[in-house]
Figure (cartoon, rainbow, N blue to C red):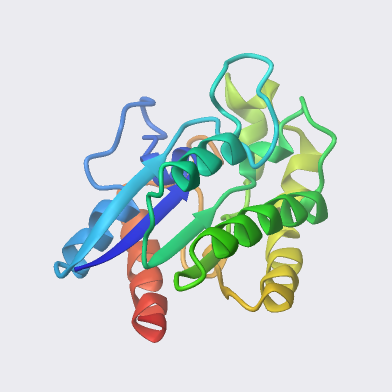
Length: 204
């Protein structure tokens, strides 16, 4: 049975934009239904960045958690990495190019550890204007965050091509809810899962 690691942030975990609860079927769970012959490993954490330490909470630095998987020899046949949205928080001085370079380190370290494994880099969905009116996210993101999110696909695709790994643009398959401008409703998780499924069928 092939193993597929889904490594990401709250949109991989399944943050419900309505009440901040965990959705029953985030996109990796939908993917599990679409690929019953594969083991889908869900590894999403709310607030997770690429390589930054969140000043409000510990344990959100993505590369630290990713390296732990490698140290523990938690190999998968395919690593699916979708990170970057939280890099656009007001806390950090990071643009889409910087996030792409950060994800490059994930790709290289995974390939070095598991040279027979494959990698799919997914550029995150775009942040919507409605995020700025949200009582929580309006204090964490700004207009620059939105513009940065719109540039993810350009820089991630270039990096993936240079590293000879697979790429997919999540924004072409799904979008954030108008409720909070950051997170997907169940129907969008379903759309993203089906797009990821189609891509995986090309890969393995």
